[in-house]
Structures are given as structure tokens and as C-alpha cells.
Length: 148
Image (cartoon, rainbow, N blue to C red):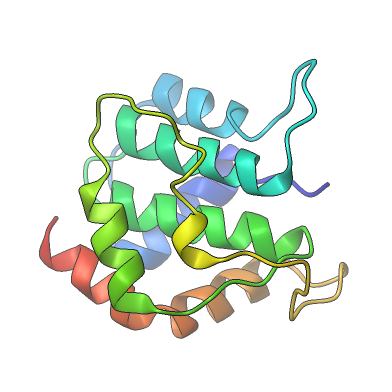
């Protein structure tokens, strides 16, 4: 299993916003930790959902939390052997509907229809995957940026 680090999440935020924004290290650390399984047997889809929801609900960055959450979840899935459906408008509407106060995260990524068939070999760098995700979902990222 490949995991994203705090540094990866900061870099993703910079990539999607085009600026360095201040962030809460404690909230960032909590979001990063959401992708790990501690004494549970969760699928990569569940872990990506937990990471995405935590980034949205805790909002560690001054700007770009939903875009960062979306890209981080897609990168986590791709890095762990999953590809996703690319209906950008539907995905952006789904992510914009996630409320900061908590419902269950298990259905958050159903809209992307993850399947075990990644475009990337396990040796691909996270930066390559981030670049691919940002390009592939540029329409969804633009819609999310308008709501920021």
C-alpha cells in the first residue's frame, strides 16, 4: 500500500491552488493519518474516502481544501492500483455537496466508480500521478475552484 505524506498533501495543495497557503499542521496530520488502517481491514477505496473527508471536514489549508482532498483521494487510488470514472461535472457536484460536519464517508467515492485497473505501474512517482490526475480532472477542479 502506498500512502501520501504531509509533504505530499502540501505539494498537492500548492499544485491545485498555484500558491503556498498557510495550514494547520495538526489538522493536516489528522487528515494524513485517516488513510491508514489501524486494527481494521478497510479497502483502499474506504481509505481514500476517509482521507478525502478528513481533508474537507478539518480544512487544514487556508484555501483549496476540496480540490486538495479530491486530488489526494484520486492519487491514493491510482497509486494503489485503482482507476476511476471520469465524469468531472458529477464528481465536482458530489464533492461540493459534502458537508464539513460529518456523515459517513463510505459513499463519497462511489461516484468515481473505482476499479482495480490503474494506468500507472507501481513504480510511478506520486508527482507523475498528481500531474495525470490534475490533467484528467481539470474540469472538475475548475468547478470546485469557483466555489472556493
